Length: 213
Image (cartoon, rainbow, N blue to C red; front, side):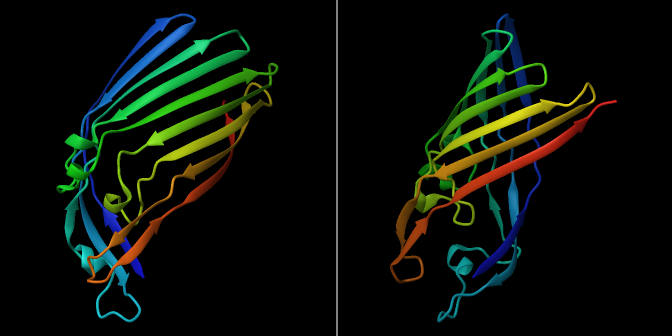
């Protein structure tokens, strides 16, 4: 069992621009790479039947630091107001993983990207709903992904509804499913061949009330 925490602080710059071509709006953004040096805090690291912990085989020890910078990225989005009731949004984000400082692990990564599409429809003056889809390609293979939070390719689906109770109160409800693509590899760092499988699925629900005065 490996129970750990990691903390880091960093600064980056963000540049953005927008073009209004009514009924189309185009937005663009560039974020610089953000340097992050994480420090491990190990609460527990044990493996049944072995004299050493899982983290120790990968250099994860209390107080050790490792570099895992946020990569630079470029994004572009488009919003098309088809009619007063219907709006379509599309977006693309490109991550420059190959140029990021990851303590040498960047050599095992390819640049990643995300593409999204959503549709919003206003049923009446009080209710509007939306559905959306997001595809994520991380550019990481299973062997070199972060084991405690693996960067897996994924397809995400979401839906939401907004109810305007009156001029000052709004209720938001939403749900999303993130379907991650599983991966596996053989780990020999402990001296034995261990098949490591990476898989996860996330279901999210949200609810909120907004009050304006």
